[in-house]
Amino acid sequence: MHHLISPPQNGCSNSSLKDQSPDWTGIFKANLSSAKDARLRHFYASGVVDASTLVKDIEFVALDFETTGLDCRKNDIVSIGLVPFTLNRIRCGESHHWIVNPRKPLGEESVVIHGITHSDVEGAPDLRRILDEVLDCLAGRIVVVHYRNIERGFFDAALRARLKEGIVFPVVDTMDLEARIHRAKPPGFWARLLGKKRESIRLADSRARYNLPFYQGHNALTDALATAELLQAQIAHRYGPDTPISEIWR
Image (cartoon, rainbow, N blue to C red):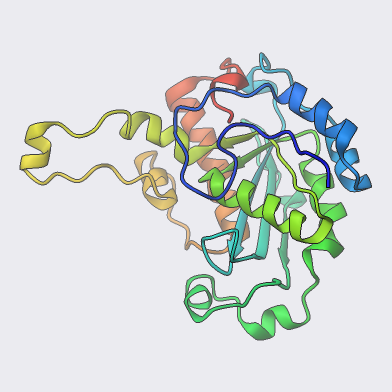
């Protein structure tokens, strides 16, 4: 097993919202030279944009997983949604949605949340069978997620279980961008005294602040689309198209 070069705070546990921007070019070069699996070598060989690249010039891809639970050490991916986009256009015609057969039990609680049942996954492929296609869709693009510890942590754990080596990649985390605004400092004394709740940074609540339409959650493709639209709104209202990607990626 090779030694994967990882950014700070990668994984499925809670992490600081203030971690510094990693050297993704260096990380990709190091992992290209050490990766054993041909699919991972191809992914790293596709490279990553320079940290100074403006967000208006970037090809993004929104990614969402539904899983059998919230702990990537004990649970697995059960569906994948993927939507390519730029700041100006969402390419729904190039979107993908896969149901995959998890290697961990599909519990009743997760079935209630995402509606994917045992009969749905019974004939579904293992992630390894569709991995080429998934990685091709991600290669050369900047991945956008809402809460990076799910997609990055689960993908890394799933590949370690199947390939004996993991994966790392930069992400723009729309939850992190909302947290920078609404969780930057703890509520003041009077807010606590009056019992005021902190602003929710969940996907649906974050979208509502930008007057984006409500979508029923916990479908990987719908949530990926919702995340793509949310980033477009965040850039338009909070950052601007000339923002360097280094300011918002992790």
